[in-house]
Amino acid sequence: MSTTAVLFPGQGEQRPGMLHELPPEGDAVLAAAADALGEDPLLLDAPDVLHGTRATQLALLIAGVSWYRAAVARGLAVSYLGGHSIGHWAAAVSADALDLPDALRLVALRGEAMRAASPTGSGMTAVLGLREEAVERVAASARDAGLLAWSSNVNADWQVAVSGTEPGLDRVSELARAAGAQRVVRLAVEVPAHSPLMAPAAERLHRALDGIEVRRPSLPLVGNLTGQTLFTADALRRELWLGIERPVRWRDGTRVLAERGVTRWLQVPPGRSLERLASALPDARALAVDDVGLDEAVARLARS
View: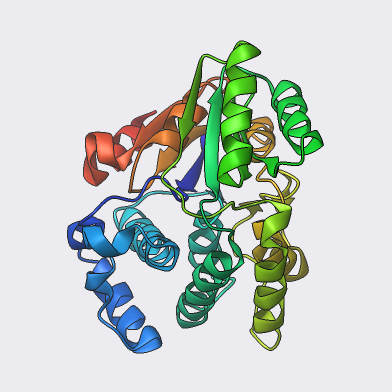
């Protein structure tokens, strides 16, 4: 019998208007966001607002939870959940490990803390066509020259992101191209996420999580820190705060799920990058809601 994992995207997949495209199940999520944040969440996806880290992360949390609820309401049977970076928070709420109002307030703080910890001009760059070891050598060479750059997302054997300051990312781009990278792309992220530069933000989030109830997930989640599945509240709590200063091991996590029998993968909106990565896994049947629509995606997965 096929096993299904739902995937929640991270920063870089956001788009203006995304919260105005939610399914009916999103109404309750938007209402919870208005109560928890004391603001109109539909303003978060305006083009001149969404570029900010806080707005982007909140919008992705709201969208992820809304679309997951809609998929389950339409009969999707789910065995595992996986969230990339901020998507991990939507996965935690969807697994009933974290209450939505708590998640909304904490994610607002997360975005603010990450932005406050970010040097001017910092961000992230994706390197395509080089393996993790090669990208880390490139980043280490930049650090040896006194620049700030670290491997931060290992999404696939051929796709690794680097976080750092603008001079560090510029140097990484030069060295990566010289080393044979197929493409080097600056990402639409204004913070050097999942790098040591985020240590002050991680500590703020760690303190904020004190006293917040984190429960054992009702469905196993794939972790970002180690790529292993998470079954306990303590493991999840550690992921939620420490993850912003450590690399995302997405490649390792999806491989673990494939080894556990996952062959059907559904990326909820926005975007389709996680669906494309999952498509490369053995025997994968991967779909993105943005490609085929929710009803069609659920129907196809039920038939496969």
